[in-house]
Image 1 (spheres, rainbow, N blue to C red):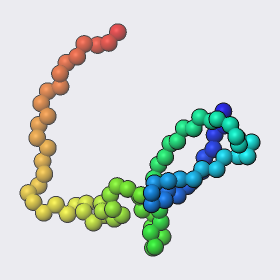
Image 2: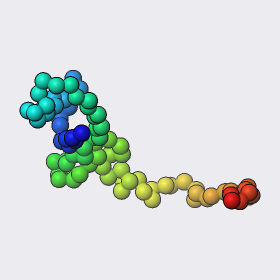
Image 3: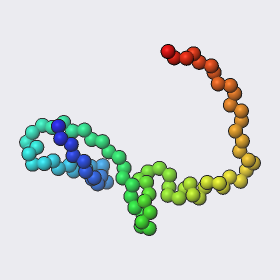
Image 4: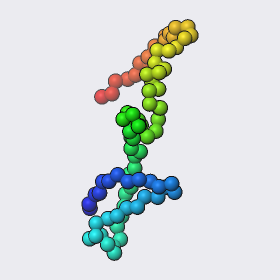
Length: 85
C-alpha cells in the first residue's frame, strides 16, 4: 500500500481532481480520503482558521462582562466509588 498526501482546491461544485502516478494507470485501487480545512492567510498576513471563531474574537470579548460578578456555586459532594482491583 502506498500513500499520497497533497493539498488540493475544492471547486464551487465540491469537486477535487486527483491525479495518481502513471504506474497506477488502468487498474482498480482502493482510496481512503481524509480531509481537513486549511487555515488561510488574511490580506494582513494574519493566519485565520478556515472555520470556527472569527479572528480576534477572544481578544475583543475577553474581560468585557459588564454585569454582576460571576460566582461558582458549591458543587456538592462527590460520590464515593468502590476501588478497582
